[in-house]
Length: 296
Image 1 (cartoon, rainbow, N blue to C red):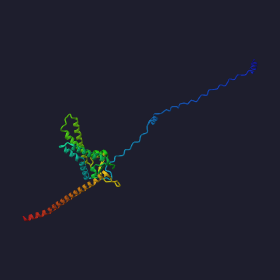
Image 2 (cartoon, helix red, strand yellow; image 1 turned 90 degrees about the vertical axis):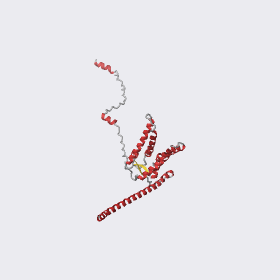
Image 3 (cartoon, rainbow, N blue to C red; image 1 turned 180 degrees about the horizontal axis):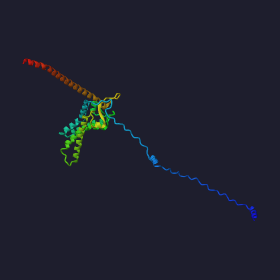
Image 4 (cartoon, rainbow, N blue to C red; image 1 turned 180 degrees about the vertical axis):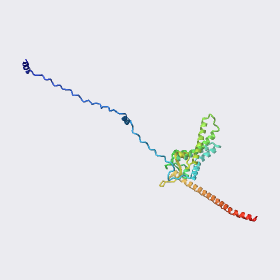
């Protein structure tokens, strides 16, 4: 039976299984694996680069080289010239106010205000000097040798003016002010502050080796002799006339120095004469005593 079965199966074709195409899996992009960040790494990543610190240059102090402090004579001439320019017309207007309050007085007050503004603000803004500085050949400079700050020029040149205004305001308002008059009390307080500032500024100058006032110390400014730089072009117009005003100041300084020298010579001659007289008296005294004893 087994052989017959095999013989029967010889004629039959054996069905082979058909090949089935296998699906090829598509490549899928994998997300990168997350990297574990340690706390130390977080600190390093989050830390911003340190900013470079600005190096502050030390503030220059002291009188710069190549400059000479203004003498007492220069300062005196500068002060008197500025005083006359700023207040001469104002005093004339105030004096006329007592008898006349008409157009003339108004004009004088207006002219006085214009002169003060020109000498205290306009001219210093342009040149750094007042008319008094031009006549006395002086100027304000900083510790670095540059022209003084504009605010210094205004404050230093108005301290006397504001003190005078303070005196006038206090003198006028104090007689009519009442306890509930806020405006009057405020005006008196401002006037007193201006007067105190003048005394403080004067005290600073008196006790300073460099003759610096309050505002000079604040802005590190020094009043020095003005010497035109070599090769500097001569000013023309009104500025040239102001520069030429220094010649009149030079003559005034020379005259005062000559008078001071004569006074010193006279004082020295007088002291020498007194010394010689004392020496002669000390020589003659023993002779007089001896003669007196002989007579007795």
